[in-house]
Length: 203
Image 1 (cartoon, rainbow, N blue to C red):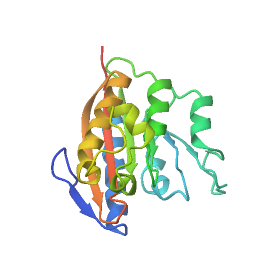
Image 2: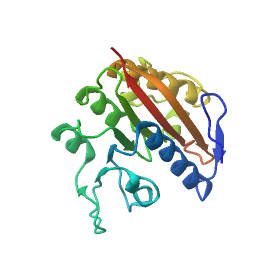
Image 3: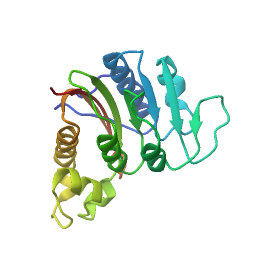
Image 4: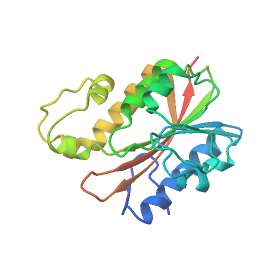
């Protein structure tokens, strides 16, 4: 299936189209960064994305609060605590497949993983804050990246503009440019957005 390159979003149902879109986005990111990449999968779950894509990377480390006994290298802990404690330099692809909002993890990444000039870094985001936007609530991490505040009327109709602004804010925080972007949309009430980014460190 085709994926959005900037402006033409693809709508998907959760299953099986959403699965195919998520796999395609991850393959695009891994191919762009290079299969010699180390992957940090912050919401590793049962390993569907590992089996479909991340097993082809050179190194993989997952994180999940539920123990998974399938042979993957995993932290069993809150990924925010893990990301604040470990060295993030060995990883050049980060997968934040949160059902809610991935921006807290993205900010931790921005503050703890310097991207060298010319270096490529892959980032996969699942944004599902649609219910918050329908209540005109701006999640704290989004507020940090965008400067927006809770109470903006009609926020749910501006979800994609908010996401664009958050990505731009994250890139600035990381001193990176956005080299590539893919996106697909879910059709559920949470208005899921599946996003793949390739960032490049500035000089």
